[in-house]
Image (cartoon, rainbow over the protein chains, first blue to last red):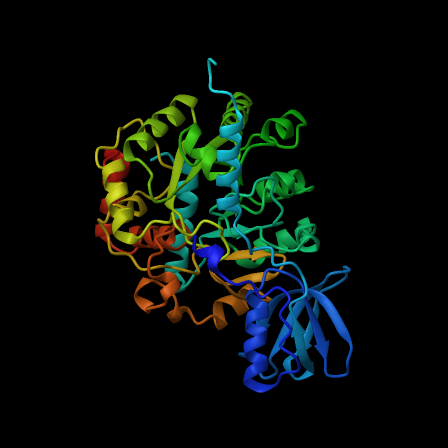
Length: 115
Length: 340
């Protein structure tokens, strides 16, 4: 299956980035279905799910749902030093194939009908 | 076709009003996702892969109603996640019905009998349970990755019908679907007594685990032509006949991505129910700042190339009905004769 061959970004730490590299990392984080740790320029960190970003505005920004609850947080691109992909990638793996495998295993473990 | 006359009238007058006002882009159905949590993990679904703290969240009823008012569409579809897991689903539906919105509550029906027994809902012409049924028992249970769900859904449908609710089914078709078995499925649903059925080809969500079984355009045309070419009069479809004809290859429609705008806890989803390219804070912002020309079959966007899904093309079909005598004539002919 194609998904099995896809590499997850889980655990990726691109380090301190800026300019186009930062934009690239933010795009990956926006596409990522796990929590990230966003490091601000002043060193403060926030862990959460990055659900939105907008570059078509005068001051581009990202939005996160913090992992520990509370309101959504909006952070300007200019305040971001780095983003680490620290949470589990919930879209990774292969649940369909896993389900097929478990189904086959279940069928194999059942005695044949009428036996 | 099985859409009730009052609903048809509401939609027709709404669309004509938009045209008279000169609105080029208008919403037809609001896709309202109060939560992403679900009690199934279907192989073709890309809607539920989120961290646990996101899955635990949901919109408030007030947020939902504000979105409904802001959007103004005459119909509200409540998918998800599984809407019957939304703690305030009864109050939300009551409020929407009070606002005379036609509500399609899209459910896998696992919890339907239980909720009906608990008196969460009251029958109304404005409320229809749209039960997810992807075919006969083996096909459905395989699609939802759990055995026994088909039987639970049938039990829920029976209970809802017994209590006087409107019930429709919604079916997503994947590659490998058998036209003959689908025809048997249509008979079975009609025997159950559902008001009508809704069909759509699947969409290849980039986050869905199963990427191999989605239909491509030509295959979609072939499948739907075989399946509906000699449609029985007793098969009732709760959707535009022109959309079904489009799936059969009889019309060359372009996508209307703003036709079924989506609102969830992230905001107004750009550009459509299927693609997640960002979120707008308001409906107006969504409509005014989304680069609509980047989407649709003819845009050259790879993500839109093979898509023929209802949320983009059914609004086109409805718009076509009210844009030309030809469209109106084709819709009336299919509605009256049942021929697609």
